[in-house]
Image 1 (tube, helix red, strand yellow):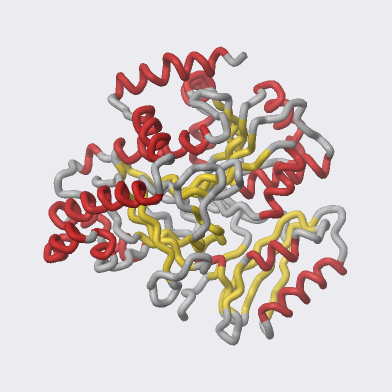
Image 2 (cartoon, one colour; image 1 turned 120 degrees about the vertical axis):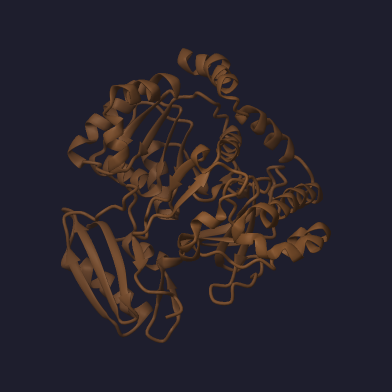
Length: 452
């Protein structure tokens, strides 16, 4: 029995909420109730929240003040009215970000945040505690589907260099260990020589679940499988977040940890957008956000099952609202209904980031999944990264291991050229693949605009 978990859940967490005036547990209760509403009732709830947000935006957010004329339409049909507002790209937001802060908010009282900078340019923005509490509630609601409660032991495979420096402070360690009941293993610098130390740490702590970046969890799993070093217990689950979870990663993680891998889809600048249920479907957090999937070029809605750009309208963020915000991800909606009984709509697939899509010399699109599908069967390739500099120029970085052969790299080259066409493919052998500022690994990315 984990006494610390019980202490946190029954006493420390409620006391903290009362002291700070938080509403996380109240929001969790609301979300657990709304997930059982009918499809029609959920749509009514979402429209109600959207109408309230849009009316607030045209009255109190400078960036949207020119849309006052839409008030009547917003009252009549907020979904139709939303499509009268422009798609907001990250570049456009950066150029006039201060205009998106509500005139009713004191900027000094808001919480500064920023994206991880996987594209090299982090987006800086503000949120308030009200918004954060809804994000946290959505996460705990999703975890409850897997019988994981507030305060249960968690091992995080996590952290940017900045976070790791903070992690060295005694006060930080004490807060993580005793108030949050979790430990952190650095995702930024997973060292193969330290694998036994990581496993010993996990065996001693015995977390209920592990939580981390898909790429870091996968790397740790591959090290465990290669060296045949495993945990002496079985966690409830391994939870993957912040990056696209590919099938080959899920397979390796589940083989190494002997348990289910849960997929959490979210973003710092979008919140918790979807969670995987025990039926392995991704349920949208419909109560917190309105999600659109639109064509890459025209920005018009696509059919269910068809991939497109993800646009997010956060229904709870009144501090710095961003309507139809282009998250940078590619996904598809599903028309199916899940057999688990939860009525929330589904994502059919999450394909990754928009800049994971490569462009052939003929102008066709090839998703970065291609490289994963090829590499997964090449045991001698420990890691790789493909960078498209132009339609005819790609660099493929390879980290070799002891099983590598020249025949494998030739196969990799041939398969790429077969799918993409007549290009210049430069192969570089490197000791490691550099991580982004947030500690993530990008397997593929394109350096030029998709419509160039």
